[in-house]
Amino acid sequence: MQYQAPANDLRFLLFDVLGADKLHKLEKYADATPDLMSAVIDEAGKLAAEVIQPTNQTGDRQGCQYDPQTRSVTTPDGFKEAYRKFVDGGWTALDAPLEFGGQGLPHTLKFVVDEMVCSTNLSLGMYPGLTHGAISALYAHGSEELKQTYLAKLISGEWTGTMCLTEPQCGTDLGLIRTRATPNNDGSYSLEGTKIWITGGEHDLVDNIVHLVLAKLPGAPDTTKGISLFVVPKFLPESGERNPAFCGGLEHKMGIKGSATCVMNFEGAKGWLVGEPNDGMRAMFTMMNEARLMVGMQGLGLAEMAYQESLGFARERLQSRSLSGPKNPDGPADPIMVHPDVRRMLMRQKVLNEGMRALALFTGHQLDLSVAHPDAGVRETADDLVQLLTPVVKAFLTDEGFNNANTGLQVLGGSGFTTDWPLEQLVRDGRIARIYEGTNGIQAMDLVGRKLSLKGGQLVRTLFGTLTGYLKDNPDAPHREELKGAIKALEQATLWLASNAPKDPEQAGAAATPYLRLMALTVIGYLWSRMAGVAGEQLASGEGNQPLLEGKQISARFYFQKLLPEIDWLLRDIESGKDSLMAFSDDHWAA
Image (cartoon, rainbow, N blue to C red):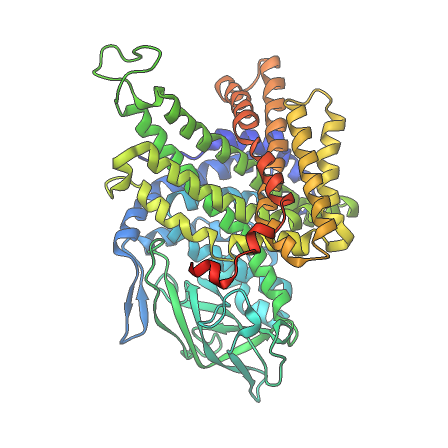
């Protein structure tokens, strides 16, 4: 079926719930009027459905092709044309800085476009997606010369960018990298080493590819404190000469086959230092944090497409009769969506998708406030929330994005298991999102091991202030008692970690994943209460889209009755500690 952008839900969230329609009152986002934001939603939805989606199945079936003779990669049929239309429409420049040719629009709008692109062709979306991280790193940490050389071309989409971090012997533990950078006489460096799993490391969509590469300088410590970041172009901008940064082959993957995932060999390739020597991790986290938010949108995008496919199937597939009597008396059977178990699956998909979208756009809105609001206190509060929620967005949206795609496959039954329907591809494509840009276990450890203690615990205090402030200001908030209970559970879990983790880091490790999930469910509960409240106000006044507003209230009830109660066992999991988890000896595993 053709993708339908969730435009009504997006407008409801952005304009009625979050107040993002007021961003144009901030000087930085003066152009982001409600009319412009609405136009972006409509045009991005049209592009996704008419240009990007038709390339998705072809990309999966053809995949990328590697030529060992030329060490080049060819993308699937239609990718070049679709990418060109994406670039010509200015979509690569949406939230990029104005001084280098960007449009300077809010990050929230990029989140919207990311979701739509990922719904319709995740593989194709990877090329501009990773480029955006390279743009941010160069803009934040590069010298003026590097910015002038690379940013305009990357922002326009004329060139693409990569993040070259992982090596065969190390993934998350980047202190183990072996790629070396040797100084040259002209201020550049020669890089030697191999990187793996490099998205867009080689392809035929653009004329030049700009690699951002982590490497170690001579004499640097063999830890993360000895890592530097370098920009290494495929072709040297000043001369057009081919730089010896070559693709050594493609990874053989279960999904996202239209995305070129490369082994990259740097054979004395010329590069330039980004930022200060041995300070590459700071620049890398600029890329990584942005990529983590983008990957969260990948999970949501796939979940939305899976929901649309499974809902369409459930409305048409005839099977058995309703338990309460025939609903399609003139046909041989009723559509399967009359059955409670199918309804449970569809409602779980819909309600989680809308809750995840609210969480993502809430975070995106805070990101915009953190960089554009004139009040320093507002900027700091917003930044606290963005830092705290970034690992939550990445992990929860990709966990549940995959689960919802898998649930969609279940709705289709045997049909879902065949390549005649798109669900099996969505499941395969979505599985990687829980792994790359830091596995979801790493996200959970980042949350409990780093974010909770940042600024003396200020980040999590800011979150609790937001949640409890909402209850204080809204004594008649929908589902107030259920939300109050969730906030209490999250507070209790946070106090347990504060008491136990400093004495035993393994307690933090054991609690990390359930704690992240508990936080996600609680914040989404807060957002569902807000959505239900706005829907109730609009219904009372007779304004708005009545089916959407009534659906919001029903969906909120489903969330608080059927999904939020998971917090009870998550809290018990956390407070039970590490003992049963860590008790096995080697003999026990082998028994």
